[in-house]
Length: 540
Figure 1 (cartoon, one colour):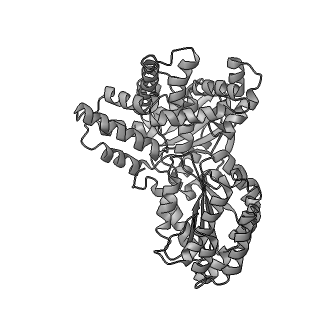
Figure 2: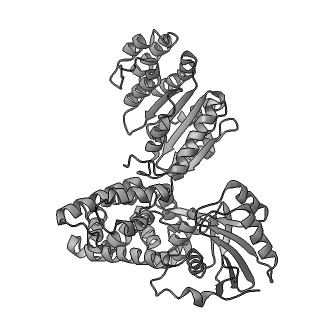
Figure 3: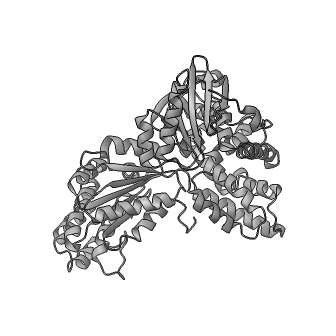
């Protein structure tokens, strides 16, 4: 994982939340994202700014009840112990009581009770008693407490069915404790947060670790490829293909550098790039291949597993809706299969549309698993060709798209809509088939016409100001027929003031995250790019 923080805006936001907590305003935080997205890194980076606070941090693993509870107890008492004294799961509770006696004497009878509960295997009660040591810790240190539970969903897997209920009660009643949770299972985590922990006096702000900040990630990729000519050309594609995963990028870039050294070359050629991709994603020995295969294997062995894998393959190959899937694999069991894929975080649902959001997994599915399901031999020499073809198609689509200006990219995207209902910007809407999409003489405005409807779109690759939003509203008012939808599309997002103005004018706002989602739903066909000038018609 990179040592550089590749999410500048998230880093600033977290530090602002920490500063507000010091001033008495608490906003509990939940960092949600797939494995390798950098949640633990973000938490550790933030905790370097929390030296004036009491920090209780306990990562969760798949382990025994006894092991977890002893680590949990040690993490709570650690701030009271000398810095040189480190405790772990093997430290006896009686020894912890002796260590803590000087600074936290009130803990002694509680620790004695906990030791007895552990001996009698009353783990649920022991969890609650350990948790209740935290207010005394806050009082003893005289500092507010930051409580970090990394991969908090493991509490449920460990069998503490009451853990979220107990946490929820304390979230409401411990104003001097900032709760920070992380999870690599976005779907389940959101359910738990919404149904058990999103409480009136202790709401959680959910922060999704999606795309990396290009202004930090691209220079970091360049630095990783230092000495290889051509790195600047491939960096933006890697950022698009590998999404928000610093781990994916680190694994791939390390292999790319290794191959360059083995080949004694200083030029990043297409052949070198494809070989590195095969080694980490395509080959059965590749790190990312094994990660993808493990995710699919877990699903295949579950309820409706075989059907779910069939559905997943079709979604990776272009199906978008349950109707599409029914036409491809038959309707029986489709809804159960989709629900299983959703619970396993292999797909996302956006309105009536489903998609495999992870582009690396999508490439592996179409380039490796799909040929295997078609009966191709497991011989890697045979599978290598379809994998490389799929990767090159992905590369060519990206090149074809990025060669266009941002408004022309959006024209190409609008032309592919198929009357699907989607959720973008927390708003549900239909993406109609348009018969004509053209750029207005104003330049940054698009007018899309279809049977009985007209859309007006403002397209801005950079930041959008309040004045620009107001000007776009004036443009829409001058259109006839009146637009049925006003869409503000931005490549870098917009500030909250401009967003409020846009919402006041009933505009649908598509930020970078929404645009990437639409590109995944509607990948461009491999065709020669039409000259931009031929697409520009004038509308009054």
